[in-house]
Length: 396
Image (cartoon, rainbow, N blue to C red):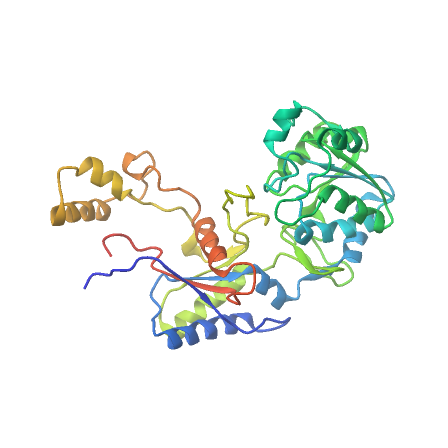
């Protein structure tokens, strides 16, 4: 009988992970126990996703705000620090800002507007239109901003992030000055020492600052790239991808993820004789139409994956074939014609009209987003995701 079900995504429960746990063993056992309990079998090219959070926890990849302060102090000394383009997040950035502020005498915090890089809004575009303010050219002081826009709270969190960040800096013993601009070089009117906090645009921002005459330029990806007094670290992403653990401690993005996924893949091959693809995933890459928030606050969707997940989909659009190439066919003849097209498709469909609209994104971004949506970020208790049938097509 032909298969009647396509892609299936299952959240899989596992024990609460602690530092030094054997995560590879826990993942394998959790999947095998789920198979037995729910009466399904593993297949070749199934995909297992493991949330980055439990990988970092098993590694003990944590640091304190004092560790952050030590590194920032070593890089900037006593000079005023321009902290630019942070995202508006109590979980992601506020805890990092505490460490940065503990290292400084003065912070000039430059916020992008009307929203941050990932879509958290200070304002709406309608408000900009009403006031005539041009966010691409107009740079505002805090007083100018308040005179024009007043006080706004975030739609979902109920937080006035401007006041929140200002008070946080001052509570850590530093002077705080808040300004608003989307031009990186504007910060150089206040200080030549800049810590840029954007995620996906950081390389360009650093280049623009250096070309404009900045003296010291670092990104969050360059803070805690090595251990400070025995702390955790991430050699590639620094503070990017970190989030709050306690009021004084952060969990960093995990390290050595490729080693972990390849080990898990090998264990599954030995135990089940199945070739399973494995990836570590963080934030998915999708936008919320209501809040306008672009989910991806991590530097990448997946910091580690097995080789079978390299690349992009290579798919034909069934509705295009049905409405164009085979518009005069129906029933079994239509099914056979479409199946033949799929079986005979080339390995590269770039430029083929029948592949238009098939979203040529990286497999790890697509599958990681599916994993993130499946596991959620709350209390589902399923930090492992098993995806079956993702690489199937109409002919399987």
